[in-house]
Image 1: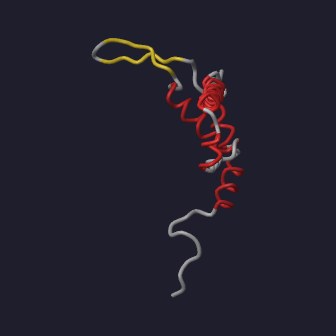
Image 2: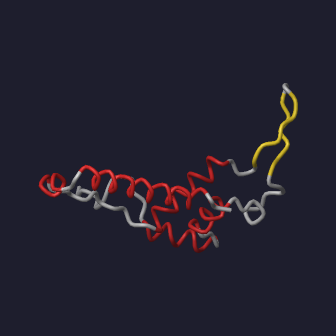
Image 3: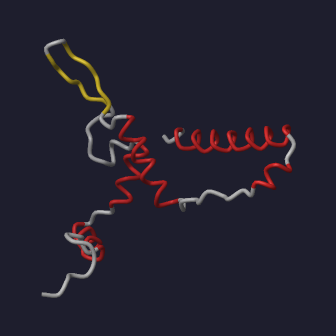
Length: 123
């Protein structure tokens, strides 16, 4: 018996796209709605729901912040290409003065903080 092509138990991507299209579902759009926290468009009745338990009643988010953060992370995989680490030759690094090394490190940290801030300011 010939060996099947591809990974065992893998689902054909084209079939998945066809099924989503036939159902009128755009998974990427739904992912973006979760990242945005757009509870109305997703079909929820309110932004927060009242939960009752033995300890009393509490209000909880319809779309939890950790779910929104995970959705943002997943959306980034589609929007931004993964970057490979840059190879730095030892001689290039050694040629920098201590102040230049410190400046480069601060510059890299500032860029990372900007990226994190842009992802967490989703509304």
